[in-house]
Length: 319
Image (cartoon, rainbow, N blue to C red; front, side):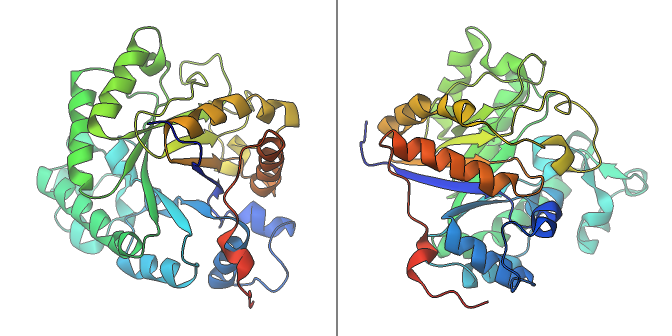
């Protein structure tokens, strides 16, 4: 059902990137700890994407701390653990009790892959992940769980069944899917992909990213489920498929206003389709996340698209 009053939430992909902190261009001098930085971030933006859960299984203790450090109305989109998206999962980062369940041939490896992992280990990883997010969910802080699949995951019966499994394992949590293989949104497959996500109640993540690669997905704004999401990765074609030491090097990009203006009509379409839209800036070298967000906010407001006010603006911030 169309809606004219969609909530439009802006945020960055992570608030803990070292280049952002080191730049001195966003956090005030008094924000010296993880707690004060999150409190400050939440006074500026209503949404953030937490990426630490991709690199290692999260804990309920961390989730409770995030709740305590953010105001009511703040939203965390949480990246799915790497094992769940067919990325390599470093074994050394697994909890000791899970490492202890690995058979000898796997325990000696550097990384774990879902296809090679015993079912009981995968089940335990999922249970740990889902349980850890419960404090966010109960506090109304959990947005969506973000499943970013790599370029070697392409459409087929196996991946379609796996998306069904993902939906089942998430339980009451909302999920969103980003693809990095052009075949998912090419030709007639685009309609099939969006229909599948809609049937499963999974959100599609639209992307702004360099084009012309097998890992490039076209900038299609679609909302098979709510919330609708757009992730802005920048347009640095030189580093898009390059192995870099850090994500900051790969997503090193300052947008030009006219590039972000291209998304205004697409975002307007999303606001008419669903009640909630998340716009996440994944340019994360220096202050690129906040700087690009401010440009995007200006373009949206100039076109008459209302953006959610920062929930912390009405509160007194103590660093």
